[in-house]
Picture 1 (cartoon, rainbow, N blue to C red):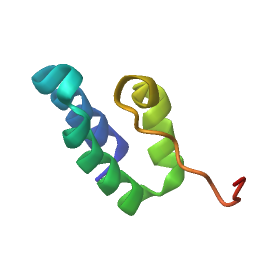
Picture 2: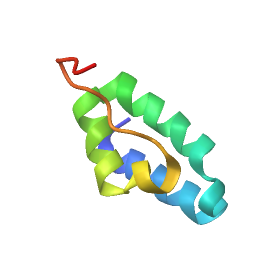
Picture 3: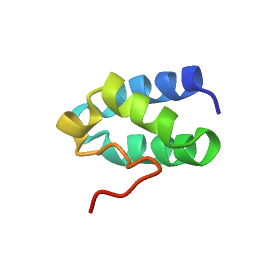
Picture 4: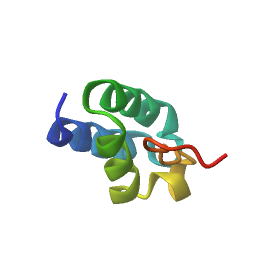
Amino acid sequence: MNLDDARKRIETAVTQYGQHAAPAIDLVMAEVRSDMGTGAFNELVEEFDLELLYNIAPMESDHSSS
C-alpha cells in the first residue's frame, strides 16, 4: 500500500460510513503502519484529523514519553 491508496480508502470509508467509519479506518491504518511505518501513520492521522473525529491517536515515534 502507498499513501495515495490509503487516502482513497480512508475517504471511501468516511463517505460510506460517516461517523461510524472508525473500524474501516482502523484496518487501513493498521496496514499503513505495517507497510510504511509510524511516520506515514501519523501523517494520515493529522491529515484527516482522525484523533478528533474517530479517536485514532498518533503513534509515538522512536522515543517513549510514558
